[in-house]
Image (cartoon, rainbow, N blue to C red; front, side, top):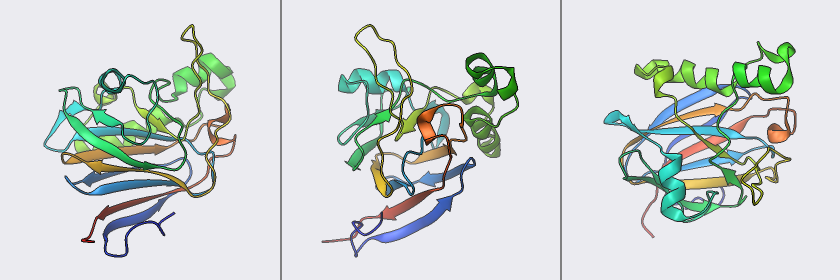
Length: 212
């Protein structure tokens, strides 16, 4: 959904990301990143790195500790491994975003869903493909954000992925507090309900807010 973007805004990038594929871009300080769940119920696995030093990257632990909540929504400061705010969530029409369950991988698919899923494409492989463009390796893939993924946590700390609640056109928007590299895996998972068992495209908009 882009109709709520101010008419005075300067669109830097607007693109669709096909189902199951990776994507990346640099978001400059002050620019806004909007991720749109075009069809609903589509998990969007996301990582952030400081653009001037990829060794500084998104930290789920610091993010959760800073805000005192297990979930990400409007007002959340996304923290780096160096204790800096990387981005702030400024708008969220969905309200459920996970930062605990991590990314699917060929290995985890095999353990969770059986050997017949061993060679299915997964988010970790997407991250590795995209990260390689920046000289990053598997050592640089850290626990990620899962936008639009519904992962209830019970009082004992157990959690599982259940049906997503995002509707077509729901979006989450962040403003960058530093220059960041964003990696996205538009999740290819078909063995649990994170994508409604049918991965679909999403849309990404990077823009600069105008005056007024």
